[in-house]
Image: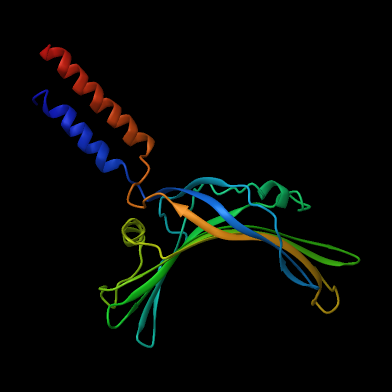
Length: 244
């Protein structure tokens, strides 16, 4: 093998390995705060603490992807594992309102709907849930907290029987222009009557806002890819020293 070919091959390999599933940086700079109870729902003037992270999934299916037909629409759904940096500035406050160390359940839900004329719509939704159920002589209590980042898309030109799967999810995430990008996080405490099972009172609060994404096509390099890229640069440097 010629020395010149080695750096080029390593760089090509690094480039090919740079994208594994989904890895897209995001920021949340705007959201409105709300409170809700038996007495009603209200927005207030609290100001969001801006934050960011990376939405990330290796697109490993949690369940078998499913499809169905409804009228002229072909539907398909997948749920994938999630490894995002999702924690908001309000997470620790919401967690402190739980009586137990409730685990966080995370997944990436994807949905695709294709019509006979080839038009389609769908969404990606990164969701993170905590919940607990406690009970005493006065009743039962449900604490829950849900954080979601949802991205909706639509377009033309898909075959009617196109079905969402890991490879299509990756391609569509990096291809589609999301026309709606929303963020929400909330905490809810519901008190349930021990005899009737009906809700006696509830109190909740949260934030509704928008998400800004880096160009979805600009995937974040995985560590292995960065290492290969470094090896490639080292090879180029060695070649230059040899020529000198």
